[in-house]
Amino acid sequence: MDSSVKLKILLADDEKTIRITLGDDLQSSGHDVQTVGHGDDALRALERTAFDLVITDIRMPGADGHMILKTAKQIRPETEVIVITGFGTVESAVDAMRQGAYHYILKPFLNSDILICVERIARLRCLQEDNRRLKDQLGKVVGVENVIGKSRTMQDVLKTVRNVASSSASVLIEGESGTGKEVIARTIHLNSDRRDREFVAVSCSALPEGLLETELFGHERGAFTDARKERKGRFELADEGTVFLDDIDDVQLSTQVKLLRALQEREIVRVGGEKTIKVDIRVISATKRDLRTLMSESKFREDLFYRLNVVPLILPPLRDRNEDIPLLVDHFIKLHAAPGREYEVKPEILDVLMGYPWPGNVRELENSIERAIVLAGQGRFLKKEHLLRLSDQFKTTPEISESLPTLKEAVMKAERDHIIGVLKTTGGHRAQAAMILGVSRKCLWEKLRDYNIEA
Image 1 (spheres, helix red, strand yellow):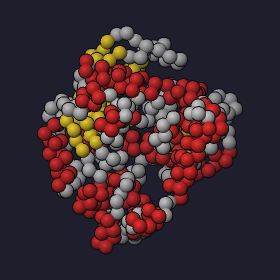
Image 2: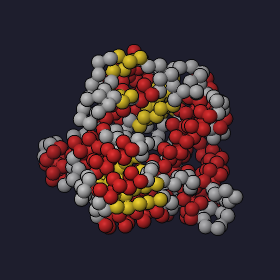
Image 3: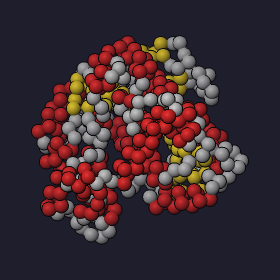
Image 4: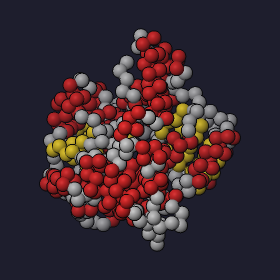
């Protein structure tokens, strides 16, 4: 995260341990944190102070988390809210998300999970500020040469970007997580005739099926509980601009049908409404999985695939363009270094970076550079142990990494095997399985998705 990003955060929870430990971790990450243990104190704090983020428990003395969420959004709609609870249900999660919550997290949780969400919100604020600055440039075109990559594969990608930018054809960007699909989508938009209009990004994997439809198409007043006023969806907000549908492979079949109609007719109907609304949008979508494989498994509609895949664009993983790593390292050092500070990576360490497979691709490389800068102290040279942690360094030796899985990999495998075993015992009954496992149905559904378990 950019070291200049500092969020004003309100943490409301009646558990003193959470207030102290999570509050300290948030402050250590550079944020301004105010903690309260009573719901009424949280409401008073919201009236006095403009917060960027509210982290609230659902159940506590005084006003509950739903009231705090509602009040925060009424006072300052741009305030993000993370809801945490030890009594989670699918219904309460959906209700919180419909009220505008950014995320819903069950107790017990790791503080690192909260910090990851906070980092995403901070990065979103950066992107929003960047977008505003770009608009102020009165339509100045950002050249594709600003996309970093001298390798043959990236030059082929940039050639396609140049050719397709001026049209309104739909583009499907394929690539592993972290390869920079949104960067390419923004580059296409900024070099198109629509650059003066909105670029609206939607993460299809971040929302449950019912909420995704509302997010895309909006809703009318009274469409569901607490829908007290109409709300425009992302398609309407992007009118005459570009919609970027990230992780399109996570969209459920029922939503795919409605999405196909919107793309074919360029018109939408809000949830709970009857009026047809015309939209003029360009659609750029991205997938981390092969949609053809999903089609063969009847998990993705063939007609939607051909509607999205007018211009295919495949982003190579970083391991297939390792000659770009020195350029990316230099770029990320300049991006994350404090003003006036300079850092270097010794040639022999750069060789190690070029030999590492980077399963997290460019995103992982950026995080490694940022971590190494933070840990460098007053030193000028970034250290290998900071750029590649011990478990990462083992991955450069296939014989060792294959025979000795990391602790995280071992735990994940054990958890996956246990879930499969319980599902077999219950005959695939998810509610019974969730009860046996001691988790909510929502939590079990997420793990089935994450582990790609059919049930």
